[in-house]
Length: 66
Image (tube, rainbow, N blue to C red; front, side, top):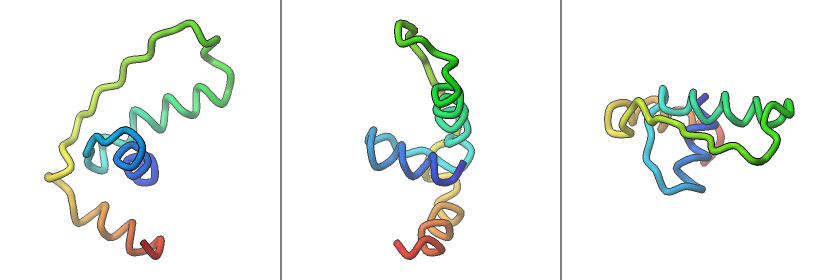
């Protein structure tokens, strides 16, 4: 989930908190499993602002050497 939150911030320019990474992580897992056929519109909700839990994401990034 933390890696997903970081990926969203890097690729979509949306600052999300740790919990906000859950929706994209789930959507990516479903896509990898072939759940979507390519015609759907997928809507994800960012349930957590990045300013709420910056210490969690900072710790994750430091653990990754970033």
